[in-house]
Image 1: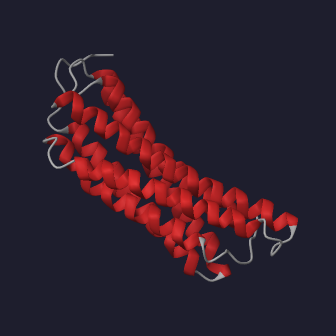
Image 2: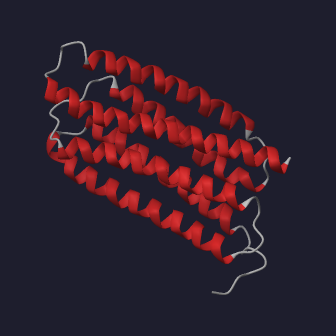
Length: 206
């Protein structure tokens, strides 16, 4: 394998921007699932799988570039962490959609919409932030807001758990729904990891 001394111009930045846009698409499919008829869920899940595969391809492209480049725009470890965290977000969102279909969940609690709203906003902010890695400017608001959103997601998660264990649902439905909301909560946590990694990179480069 030939190792380049310098990266292709803007290659990492472009690939991170691609990952960010893909997360927006995934979050949009999550929201679409909430309002979809039961008969349309499988088709949405299939589009989500394609979105997740696109995310995998973007992550693999970053890893290949990392392995083939000697000099990187910022620390190799941080590039790896950022790519992995972006990929994790997509994996968790796709898992949530897949579980809804596999478990044939008849009705989702309306509070799940609050979880999805947080993820959609986090995806939007992440997609906007990724191109700014090139200049390392105007990024502090990104990680501050992502941390705030993750705290909001935690509060929503606890409210949903309280409802699930209130006796309103039968035990089997509780188990199914809890797996879905756990995946959505994990996606919110992964967004926070993205924000923390961006903060680390910005501090090192300042």
